[in-house]
Length: 345
Image 1 (tube, rainbow, N blue to C red):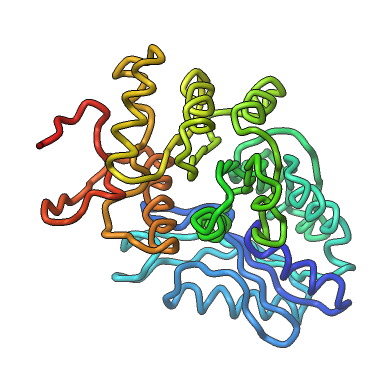
Image 2: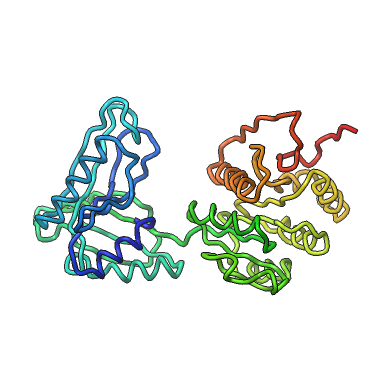
């Protein structure tokens, strides 16, 4: 639901009725996550996706019917062979409901909490012997897994919306602007930090929070406030050692980080690692630093480099093993190298 919050608000404020369909359970393996939602507005426009295929078409029809009839209900759809989203033979349970001011008066409160990066959890009754209770909602700030809970007299779907993961980009430049776009698409809350107020201007980085401060001081402030955890990503995009090395010194001493990377050329990487080793960091600690940042996809422009960094960030977030195809003929400007890699002279 998080990805269609603005569309839901627009329908809610219109005073008209749409149909909302939410995946509450899946049977079978595949990339379709529980909690995925589709909205059909009063004009038939569709927002959100279930990865396509005939199942999505059927779900859209069910949501359209809910908008027209006002009926709420739980539907089970089988997944035909070759269908995207789940393995053949899988099933998906979808709750459909009308969506409007009358049907979901609490929704602006949910949207406000999500916009403020505060945790909010929505409980929805998706089955009950009393049809009048089906579709009832309860909002709470408590932490809970997103799942379907079977109670003695009800089935309740719990949709949890934690604060989004945070990406902090140090260095206000064209690479930061391009990476902001990629990170927002991936659901990150983005902050740009630079000590130069002439570069760190909000207009240059739409959708990001912009902070003017010395990078190492700002990171220390966030850490002291408890705002850094194992979902936080940090990318350093400025190559000046006078601010990069103090910043990385602070970052490498943090106990938890989801991703830490520093961009730049191969020569900048060698200088960076040498400086950090001189500061007392061993190879095991330096292995936490992705330097140069990004997967080796032949990136050259700011937009391409942003894609390569976003791809590496996803790999780090998912915990999957990196598979980097080396091209020995290419200039290793944005390739991932281990900190202790030998250098051919």
